[in-house]
Amino acid sequence: MRFMILVKANKDTEAGTMPEEKLIAAMADYHEQLVKAGALLDASGLQPSSKGWRIKYSGGKRSVIDGPFTEAKELVAGYTTIQVKSREEAIEWSKRFPNPIGEGAEAEIEIRQLFELEDFGPSEAIERFRDMGVATKK
Amino acid sequence: MRFMMIVKASKDSEAGVLPSEKQLAEMGKYNEELVKAGMLLAGEGLQASSKGARVRYSGAKRTVIDGPFTETKELIAGFWLIQAKSKEEAIEWAKRVPFEDGEVEIRQVFELEDFGPSEAVEHHARLREQITKTSAKPKP
Image 1: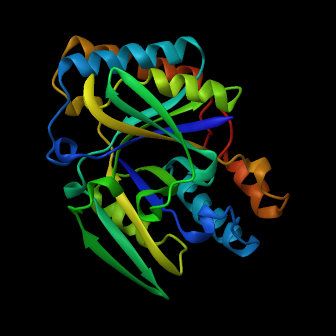
Image 2: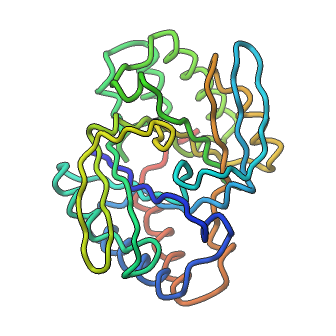
């Protein structure tokens, strides 16, 4: 089973403030433990929404809306995807995730299960996804 | 440059309604074009938040809160991770996403070079090398 650990944006991430060396080190330690357990699939940080944009689809029309976007709670600042044997194992790993703001601060992360191709009924389209190696276990 | 194209949750995605065969076919075609262009790094769908959880940090305490979570606009339902040569190229590809309505948010991903050089950043670089080696990346 694959899970995604999501870190939401806050004032600092949106201001482009880089994490302190101590937090970067704690993140490196945590991700190293994931690598050793064979559980790490990917991890990345997202640049502030001021460098991003949204595309709004309406019928055949598409409009581009440039960032920044104001609702920090609706924005993602980073993620870690993991492969584990059970939801319980995912919860255990998530509890060990370093506080993304810094130890002692109030913060929250969100854990979501990823769809596997087997979750969809068999179809030609799903077979094409499989051939492309999209949404498949690594 | 890497970009993440984020699809927000909707009533349907939160209810666990799977995309129709037609939507899957259109999405498959779009993904194939990304693969042919050598741009697709990942494409994933997230299960409804009812199957997810949140971990809340307060001081040294960690509390697990089980989903579902109600604020659909704060939830994501899926994403693509693409490699593009420029912001303009990423915009062009985002405009081709086969959606009839709704919104996709595009965000640039940090590269390790964006951080100042430090021991911790070096550590991350070594880890990235390790996961790249161990994960069997799909061959475009």
